[in-house]
Picture 1 (cartoon, rainbow, N blue to C red):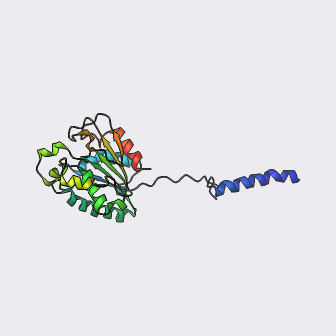
Picture 2 (picture 1 turned 180 degrees about the vertical axis):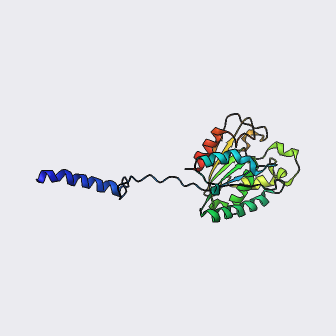
Picture 3 (picture 1 turned 120 degrees about the horizontal axis):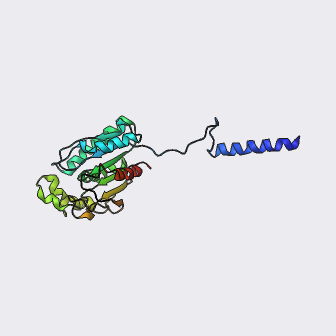
Length: 230
């Protein structure tokens, strides 16, 4: 009789240990490892563009489980100073957080959108509200193509501009956000090619992509999704 009880007691002991370790839930269901949080995403387009350029990437995020409420694309005046756009980003982020109940957002940018969003992170408190920040083909250290236009935003994108010197001073990736950039040697708009990578960021060279291919390329999307959702 005593021998028959031992296996039963041993089984109960092991099950109790598994439950405490989180292997089994109290109701016998298996506890899943906590999935990474899906933060809402704010998409910021570049110069002389609009929020419509994100259609493909937004569709991909929806297919992978993000909801409409978690995906915000918008359009802004691309001739104004990036500092002014940064203030609009601050308002937009606060609105998204209020609407979704999230504590942080992810920010995915293309081209000049990286500059205004970095200004927001560095100077307007955005570093406390951004989890992951992404720059696709961003002129983070300037681009010579900006000499072809005269708007305030273009002047700020020129290599060595006062705006960029201030933005890149001391720390190119300030605060708590995780920063990542993607750049292409075939991007004829961002010159020189090494303008995009930032010190302190995860910097990735893509395949031969044109400037407007970043937000449509499947491989880049998969890498960006993996970066923001972890």
